[in-house]
Amino acid sequence: MGPQDAEAGADVLASGIHDAKNRLFEAQTLLARAAEEHGMPLADAGEAISGAAMRLSRTLVAYRLLRERQALAIAPVPVGELAEDALLTVRPRFGQCGIALDSECRFRGEWPLDRTLVCDVLVNALQNACRHARSAVRLEADLHEGRLRLSVNDDGAGYASPPPALAQDGRSGLGLFIAGRIAALHARRGRQGELSLRDGGPLGGALFELLLP
Image 1 (cartoon, one colour):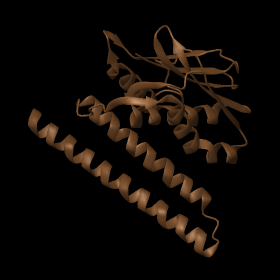
Image 2 (cartoon, rainbow, N blue to C red):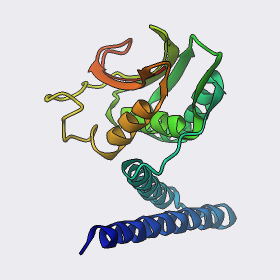
Image 3 (cartoon, rainbow, N blue to C red):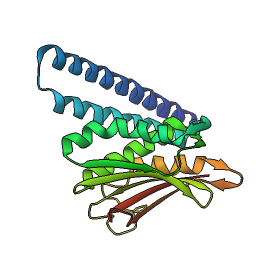
């Protein structure tokens, strides 16, 4: 198989992922409608479908980033609205798990970024934090050394060793790869965005920081 055949095969795979993701979202809509009309307890099934669809969606994003086909849509975005978008997406899950979720935006002005991709990074970070937190997760936004800093902190046990960027535990993998690439693709005035993972922060557990120039 030559390089062109491999590329064609990868494109077919990506197309299949896209179609499967759309079918899962359709199934989730049908489940929600059935639950509402017939009072059926389908919350667990809906959540499983939603998780599978999100996984496929992130796989597709990873493919496009690797093939350099994911163009950023950079525009000034109100940081407060960006944070609220992410919080609204994950709040139902936090309620089901009994994990407290709060936020503090010390910078609420506009910042040039890709709203959709950065929001997805925050949602993924919040979902991971929810899985590992004991009781609380916090989202913060501020300015740090001339860059926008978006951080997610939990009160869990923290990151395992080896360093998070190299670890193969539940906190690394596809979501971390995508977050790192999205950060690096945000470049301005000779500076690139970056991802920082460490322990500490106000809640003492794992601290996820996305820094955008």
